[in-house]
Amino acid sequence: MKNDKHPLVIFDLDGTLSDTQEGIKVSVRYATDILRQSNPSIPQLTEADLNEFIGPPVYDQLRKIGCTDSEAKEGLRLYRVRYSQPKKTEDTPGMFLSRAFPEGKKLLELVSKKYPDWIKTTGTSKPEPWAHVILDKLGLTQLLSSIPHDNGDEKGFQNNGVFGASFGEDRANKESVLNYVLNNVANYFSPDSKWQDVLNPVLVGDRFHDVCGAKKVGIPVVGVKWGYAVEGELEGKLDYPAADLIAKTPEEALSAIEKIIQAN
Image (tube, rainbow, N blue to C red; front, side, top):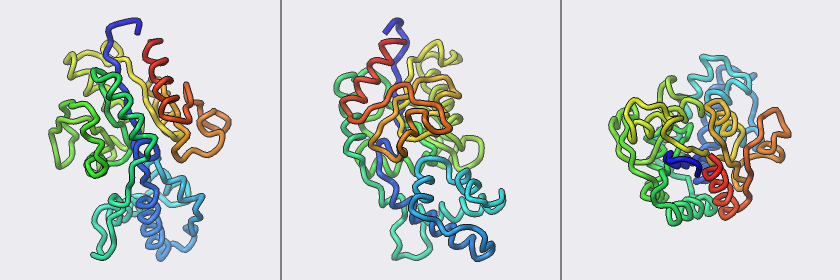
């Protein structure tokens, strides 16, 4: 490192630390099946279509498949019902179908062991209370840093490394979530300081919206290949910017993180 700024590694959740695709797909199908009863033009989703919902905000993806604003908002509400509290008691909530990605868990363990003083948080487009439930279930919360913050939702003040979206529209995409992480962590070290003066951050993610959000905020991103990205997505070969560095294994990802932190 070229300065005394605090290293901060921000981990995406879906596709990076956790394999959440089953619960997301079940919940999206539930929502779109109900929406289709009122609007038959809403398409039947293929597996490829459903894969596009893993990571990005659900509302945004519903709009992309042709839902109006009001339909997408209702679809998001229905999705959240199925994901957290399904009406049929025999249905497992979608969030409980999550599993840890072995590669993501190993990377978090590697960073925690080699650099215990580095700050480690999540930065997910999933609502923060849900992210907390999933990370607790997977045994990953204790590997994150303890950063005091108020998430603005029903749980209020928190003292952990779990940062995510809100249930409202104020913190709904990756850019706003990353700003939320950066500002809270910077405030922890130096109240009222700009994060650029205090932190040396890097995002670890697996999808285009991770890269786009990081670029908008102005932080580097390591793209990991064990997640849900399609071929060329992280390399900048599609209609998205490229990740700064790309890793196929936890060891490669650790090396990429070190390279970025040491260069800044």
